[in-house]
Image 1: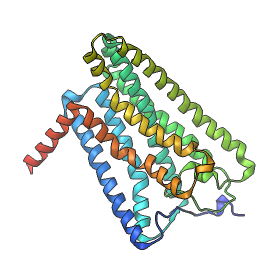
Image 2: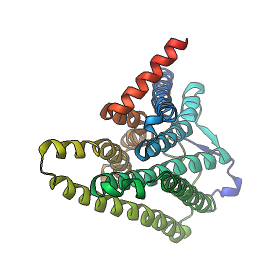
Image 3: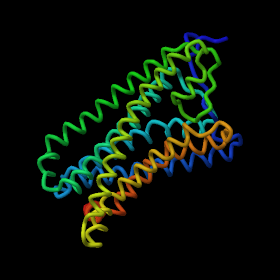
Image 4: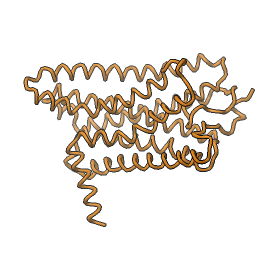
Amino acid sequence: MSNSSSIRHFLLLALADTRQLQLLHFCLLLGISLAALLGNGLIISAVACGHHLHTPMFFFLLNLALTDLGSICTTVPKAMHNSLWDTRSISYEGCAAQVFCFVFCAATEFYLLTIMCYDRYVSICKPLHYGTLLGSRACAHMAAAAWASGFLTTLLLTAYTFSLPLCHGNALGQFYCEIPQILKLTCSKHYLREFGLIAVSVCLNFGCFVFIVFSYVQIFRAVLRIPSEQGRHKAFSTCLPHLAVLSLFLGTGTFAYLKPPSISSPSLDLALSVLYSVVPPVLNPLIYSLRNQELKAAVWRLINGWFQEH
């Protein structure tokens, strides 16, 4: 029986057993991380530099891109390091930092997606009050609330998780540190505290989910009342990127954490973990840029300006 006080490092799940596959995974992760950095970096630069994009929707999109950058920079570099150097080890402090950063980015992203849902609701259901309800000060306050809520939620979850004694070794069934895997190593007599920890997180997330569902019910009702088909299509198309990003974020994460134990397997768990932790930061910029002509034009102007300067 080991105790958390004697554990100085954790062992992460190896992405591959052979050296060739490890190097292949390193190259794949390098390509994915560069794509995420490029896509989100272009969105941040385009929104920051394009004065015509200084609107609530693009302001929240900039914040979303920042969380995506934080998420990809938290999990992928360590996985690349382990694949390149054929190791599985991560220090106890490094694991705690990785948990904190990843949960902070994920929680903040969910809160930002909830706020972006409110932005779409006001835009479609209360267009005459859009400037009043979503002024620059209100947007700044909402974004600050999302980051602060994400920080406080993460601080609570991380502090509780790493305060639990560990009695089942130090091997994690994941390629990065995450709370469910660490909870599996805790002593059985602390299950009640684990339940309380999970309950707090579920209540916060469920509240956001109910708000999102209610908002989209109102949005769909408002869109269906628009007399012209072209007007309905235009109104609904502004919600498609947000719906796609939200579905990708919630769908993969929910299935990964709530799937039936009967279909669980190490390979499936690994594939799902990559799907909800690595793929969204890469696809989110693509989803928004492809569906939004203003953003696409701003990104191309930014790229052309850079090439002309160099």
